Image (cartoon, rainbow, N blue to C red; front, side):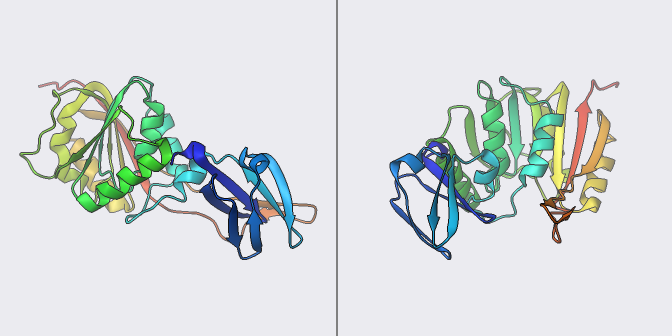
Length: 257
């Protein structure tokens, strides 16, 4: 069942992502019977117990926030910046180390439609969840995704591609400095993107790649603060999605030695 077969139900700030084929859905506001017209997701609404329920086609952001997970996902606010700053192109060849639940992978595969994404995960149970999420989004495993089970910390780990193959490399690992060898697969001029929740992880990794042929190193944190705007108020919400992780980016250059 792909994203095309999902419908988003919205009521008073609450969102539910369900299969279009469902004829009825239960909420704490009451049970909703879904008609064929509402399945088209064009903003139709119906009243149930005095509440307005709207029906939309879901966005990728709404899908990612609802995916099955065993690990902390990379949130859309961070993914959007990573994709933009890394300048992901349609024909890019990409390596991702740390598949996790597949939130970043879905976004990469959506952008690099005519390229290829090789995604590496050490744990088979994590990879299984990511595959399920990929199938739920695309309806099947796209041809541009290759799943690999492996430990990128292992010095003997190898991919079935040549060195300097990748246009972009994305790392989501607790100790990225142990995966330095994977950077040999990145082209000269290619972009490295690393994601970690703690700044000390970023600091150590930056210190390591500075010893190598990487320059233009940037570290950033994205904070998302939403506002309440109505006829009585215009102020930030009481709660915000603040720190989720740090994004580090760098460019690979020729070795001067």
